[in-house]
Length: 283
Image (tube, rainbow, N blue to C red; front, top):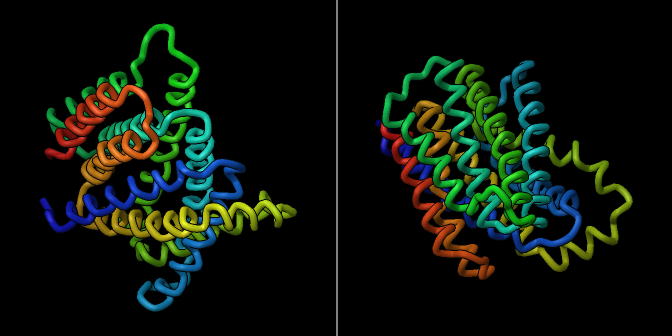
């Protein structure tokens, strides 16, 4: 096992939890906030990619970032709307648990990876942990059921872009820095029509949430570039679940900062999810 690569994934998990806390603070038009932080990410990443990335003109360098840009826009908007309608302590663990679970299933059944019995057991434990976090009952309350819905949809988007990004940086051998810089720039451009005519709203939102925009704009690309680099030397069935150790960090921060309800149960559920993640990564 490449422990240095695992260390990168662990650092990415910390960055990921922190930027999700910042995103949770925003209230308002999801498209406005997502466009602002994607544009900030593009302005940050493009100069770095021009200096340190690899630029070999090819169809892969165009199609790869374009597909992931569309998937990431869907992910970001779904996540932001979920945060507006339900607790972070429901949406975040469900999304980060179902995403790697779907990814591992595809990695085993389609890509031919063979993680072994412990990772498969870990997948079952992740599902159990999600049930604990959400307090699932036959009659769910509206906030929890909404959180599960948006968390599951977000998890499906996570699986989709993770599988595509693995294909892009491993099979197509694209430079992670160049790939992400182009992808986030395309995300900003593709989302621009959603904010045309909203100049006053953009100005107001940036004035109020400048810190959150810049924090997400910096930590989101940093976290995912680290994951893309790790994909070069670790199996997808290890990287996808290992990065979701951010679940526990996110749950602790949500309880501390937002005083969300049922902290003991949700933290216990997050610990169960983390146990499943550890087992999945044990191959």
